[in-house]
Length: 157
Image (cartoon, rainbow, N blue to C red; front, side):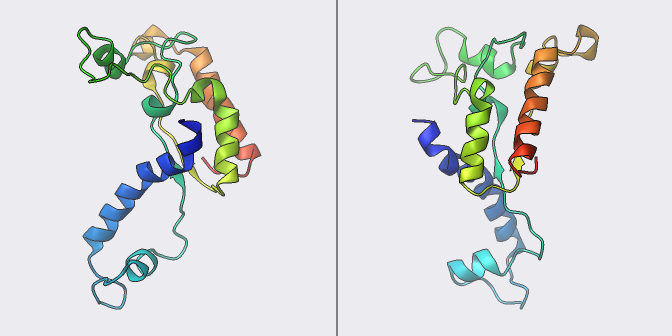
Protein backbone atom coordinates (compact mmCIF):
# COMPACT_ATOMS: atom_id res chain seq x y z
CA UNK A 1 0.00 0.00 0.00
CA UNK A 2 2.76 2.45 0.84
CA UNK A 3 4.39 2.24 -2.61
CA UNK A 4 1.12 3.00 -4.43
CA UNK A 5 0.70 6.24 -2.50
CA UNK A 6 4.26 7.59 -2.60
CA UNK A 7 3.57 10.64 -4.83
CA UNK A 8 0.56 11.51 -2.68
CA UNK A 9 2.50 10.99 0.55
CA UNK A 10 5.39 13.08 -0.73
CA UNK A 11 3.10 15.94 -1.72
CA UNK A 12 1.30 15.78 1.64
CA UNK A 13 4.67 16.27 3.33
CA UNK A 14 5.66 19.19 1.07
CA UNK A 15 2.36 20.97 0.50
CA UNK A 16 1.58 22.11 4.07
CA UNK A 17 4.76 24.18 4.34
CA UNK A 18 4.11 25.77 0.93
CA UNK A 19 0.53 26.59 1.85
CA UNK A 20 1.67 28.11 5.15
CA UNK A 21 4.17 30.32 3.32
CA UNK A 22 1.48 31.32 0.84
CA UNK A 23 -1.02 32.12 3.57
CA UNK A 24 1.52 34.23 5.41
CA UNK A 25 2.24 36.21 2.25
CA UNK A 26 -1.48 37.23 2.09
CA UNK A 27 -1.27 39.32 -1.06
CA UNK A 28 -0.35 38.69 -4.65
CA UNK A 29 2.34 40.60 -6.49
CA UNK A 30 -0.31 42.96 -7.83
CA UNK A 31 -1.42 43.82 -4.28
CA UNK A 32 -4.71 41.91 -4.30
CA UNK A 33 -5.78 39.14 -1.95
CA UNK A 34 -6.03 35.66 -3.57
CA UNK A 35 -9.63 34.90 -4.47
CA UNK A 36 -9.37 31.51 -6.11
CA UNK A 37 -7.05 28.55 -6.43
CA UNK A 38 -5.40 29.79 -9.62
CA UNK A 39 -4.42 33.15 -8.09
CA UNK A 40 -3.39 31.48 -4.86
CA UNK A 41 -1.14 28.86 -6.39
CA UNK A 42 0.35 30.51 -9.44
CA UNK A 43 0.88 34.20 -8.85
CA UNK A 44 2.77 34.02 -5.57
CA UNK A 45 5.83 31.94 -6.33
CA UNK A 46 8.90 33.83 -7.48
CA UNK A 47 10.58 33.06 -10.80
CA UNK A 48 12.91 30.09 -10.39
CA UNK A 49 10.90 28.57 -7.51
CA UNK A 50 11.80 24.87 -7.36
CA UNK A 51 8.91 22.45 -6.89
CA UNK A 52 10.04 19.17 -5.41
CA UNK A 53 9.26 16.23 -3.19
CA UNK A 54 10.20 15.68 0.45
CA UNK A 55 10.21 12.89 3.01
CA UNK A 56 11.21 12.28 6.62
CA UNK A 57 13.59 9.44 7.49
CA UNK A 58 11.46 7.81 10.18
CA UNK A 59 8.36 7.83 7.99
CA UNK A 60 9.90 6.06 5.00
CA UNK A 61 13.23 4.34 5.76
CA UNK A 62 12.30 1.41 7.96
CA UNK A 63 15.33 -0.78 8.66
CA UNK A 64 15.02 0.33 12.27
CA UNK A 65 17.74 -2.01 13.53
CA UNK A 66 19.63 -2.71 10.29
CA UNK A 67 23.36 -2.37 9.75
CA UNK A 68 24.29 -0.83 13.08
CA UNK A 69 21.61 1.85 13.32
CA UNK A 70 21.08 2.97 16.89
CA UNK A 71 17.70 3.63 18.50
CA UNK A 72 16.11 7.04 18.14
CA UNK A 73 13.44 8.66 20.28
CA UNK A 74 10.65 7.34 18.03
CA UNK A 75 12.01 3.77 18.22
CA UNK A 76 12.10 3.98 22.00
CA UNK A 77 8.63 5.49 22.21
CA UNK A 78 6.87 3.13 19.76
CA UNK A 79 8.52 0.07 21.30
CA UNK A 80 7.45 0.91 24.86
CA UNK A 81 4.88 -1.31 26.58
CA UNK A 82 2.03 -0.82 26.49
CA UNK A 83 2.32 0.73 23.05
CA UNK A 84 1.39 4.42 22.98
CA UNK A 85 0.16 3.91 19.40
CA UNK A 86 -3.49 2.89 19.16
CA UNK A 87 -2.91 0.03 16.72
CA UNK A 88 0.65 -0.78 17.87
CA UNK A 89 2.29 0.19 14.59
CA UNK A 90 5.74 1.75 14.33
CA UNK A 91 8.23 2.90 11.71
CA UNK A 92 10.20 -0.35 11.97
CA UNK A 93 9.52 -1.16 8.32
CA UNK A 94 7.63 1.96 7.11
CA UNK A 95 8.01 2.06 3.29
CA UNK A 96 11.30 0.12 3.62
CA UNK A 97 13.17 2.76 1.66
CA UNK A 98 16.39 1.73 3.41
CA UNK A 99 16.30 -1.51 1.41
CA UNK A 100 14.29 -0.26 -1.60
CA UNK A 101 15.69 3.23 -2.27
CA UNK A 102 16.38 2.44 -5.95
CA UNK A 103 12.69 1.67 -6.49
CA UNK A 104 11.76 4.84 -4.61
CA UNK A 105 14.02 6.94 -6.83
CA UNK A 106 12.30 5.42 -9.87
CA UNK A 107 8.92 6.38 -8.39
CA UNK A 108 10.20 9.93 -7.96
CA UNK A 109 11.53 9.98 -11.50
CA UNK A 110 8.29 8.58 -12.90
CA UNK A 111 6.38 11.28 -11.01
CA UNK A 112 8.51 13.92 -12.73
CA UNK A 113 10.55 14.94 -9.69
CA UNK A 114 13.45 17.28 -10.33
CA UNK A 115 14.23 17.99 -6.65
CA UNK A 116 14.04 15.79 -3.56
CA UNK A 117 14.55 16.82 0.05
CA UNK A 118 15.13 14.00 2.51
CA UNK A 119 16.05 13.96 6.15
CA UNK A 120 18.92 12.03 7.67
CA UNK A 121 18.37 9.64 10.53
CA UNK A 122 21.16 10.64 12.86
CA UNK A 123 20.70 7.33 14.70
CA UNK A 124 21.67 5.62 11.44
CA UNK A 125 24.81 7.77 11.04
CA UNK A 126 25.80 8.19 14.70
CA UNK A 127 24.30 5.14 16.46
CA UNK A 128 25.74 6.12 19.86
CA UNK A 129 24.42 9.69 19.51
CA UNK A 130 27.89 11.23 19.37
CA UNK A 131 30.87 11.48 17.05
CA UNK A 132 33.00 9.96 19.83
CA UNK A 133 30.94 6.76 19.50
CA UNK A 134 31.96 6.54 15.86
CA UNK A 135 30.29 6.98 12.50
CA UNK A 136 28.26 4.04 11.21
CA UNK A 137 29.80 3.24 7.81
CA UNK A 138 26.75 1.35 6.44
CA UNK A 139 24.52 4.30 7.35
CA UNK A 140 26.82 6.71 5.52
CA UNK A 141 26.96 4.33 2.55
CA UNK A 142 23.15 4.27 2.41
CA UNK A 143 22.87 8.06 2.16
CA UNK A 144 25.75 8.22 -0.31
CA UNK A 145 24.10 5.56 -2.50
CA UNK A 146 20.76 7.38 -2.27
CA UNK A 147 22.36 10.64 -3.42
CA UNK A 148 24.20 8.87 -6.25
CA UNK A 149 20.95 7.22 -7.39
CA UNK A 150 19.09 10.52 -7.31
CA UNK A 151 21.77 12.26 -9.35
CA UNK A 152 21.96 9.37 -11.85
CA UNK A 153 18.22 9.87 -12.43
CA UNK A 154 18.41 13.63 -12.90
CA UNK A 155 16.99 14.49 -9.48
CA UNK A 156 18.75 17.13 -7.41
CA UNK A 157 19.00 16.19 -3.71
